[in-house]
Length: 635
Image 1 (cartoon, rainbow, N blue to C red):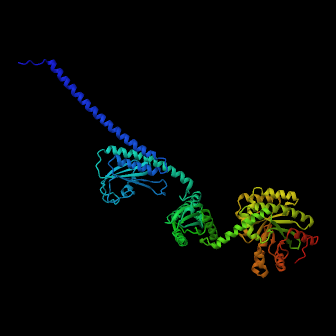
Image 2 (cartoon, rainbow, N blue to C red; image 1 turned 180 degrees about the vertical axis):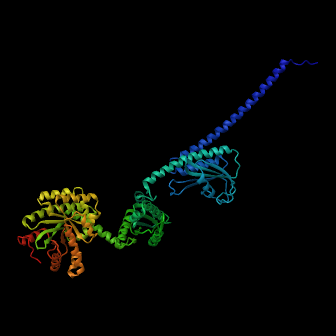
Image 3 (cartoon, rainbow, N blue to C red; image 1 turned 135 degrees about the horizontal axis):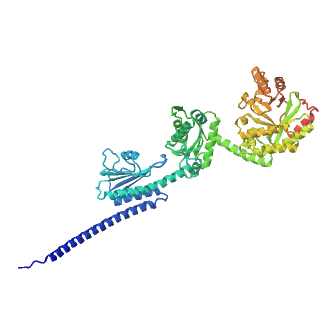
């Protein structure tokens, strides 16, 4: 009979068997851990590589689109999702969204849905927070849901509470590693959020530099930047320059908020024009629009339709507003061959539209082109004349009611063959700022001549000089006058500066301050051409004046002996006298008018009845020919 092993040996065997089982389990567990770690490491490597690919494109020129494409490609490669699309939403809600899609190779939905999100995705986005995620089964009512793709994942892209875009992914496959897919989607959504934020920051900076803050339209700098490229365009272009009429009244009557909304709506209407290439706001109430045309001959009808749409009434906070405007139109290449010339042509046409008074459209045409060319030639001639000192003063005598020459008005003349009159060249001198140089020299010469005539003819007491607003805006103007008076020896009270009504009414405070300083020096101020400007007698109560000059348009009518005209002139003289002003009548061309004006109470008379404007030598001779008392023998 076989002998049983001792108990201790049996226990040892059992112990060894248990130890072996534990080692086998430990080895199995270790293999499981190693396999899990390897798989986890692989997944992390996949995510890291995908994130790296997205980040690589975060700062290149096409950063947003390329980064999004890399993200979608990674999702197709490493997850069960077969069709992916993404949408980036610009911060300003004005620029169009950026849409990107990717389809797994070999997949072919019967209906390619394009890059737009499904309607239900759009509705979900409005409620979702950044990095929210949802997986859904097929929604039968969705027209843009790809066929055969039964599952969908939506993930919102953003940072904090700032929503910047959306991922919409589709598949017909069951996901064997749904946790990894979710991790992958979230990791790429986070990385895209940084790319999208960079793009938004870039857009914000660009918007500040190139966009009008109020309307979102291009600003002046951006418009002229784009205008430089116009010559490379082979299609005809129309440039429409619009000035909103009555905008100041809308601002005053409806308030700034309504006025701002009005400008915003105008910009939207202009941008909605299908042929619009660019819209810019150039000034507070000025817009410019570039239109692409099939044919240059279509310009006017296209613009007329556009303006008709622009003129549709608006209701803003219960305020009824009917847009009105002046508009200038120029066409490329008919009217100009490069951008700045095209803008200049439209600007000129707009100026002519304003001159009509009524709102409406004016097309740049041959008539305007001829005027522009004439003005260009005038500009060249005027600049040459200034350089050659061809401008000089002529003098028209001012006669007292007792027929004494008591002064003269200095009138600017251009002494050269075929030179235009002052009505044509003086505005140009003012616009170009040349009147400062010419006016300074004329004023100096006139003051010195007046000082000499005053010594030769005691009755000669004053010299009148017309002063432009441009001269009065010059900081050194008062010192120029003071210096000329001091060097000539002419008393300040013998100098009369003639200024128009419009200058007084529209003058900046600094100009009014200079006039007050001149008057404090003793210089006299005359209101020239009274009756042609604002013609409000109430202005005489506060204007710092010494003399009122009645415009010749009133004086000439007295020749007809109309009692109504006589009554008007009498009233003007009486009010002026009541305000302590001396009155001078301009445009006296007959003895009868001179008699009537003396009877009505005018202090001084001036006009062709006494003398035309004279050169310096002729004026000197005239003063020598009068009696010692200064009595003027004509009339």
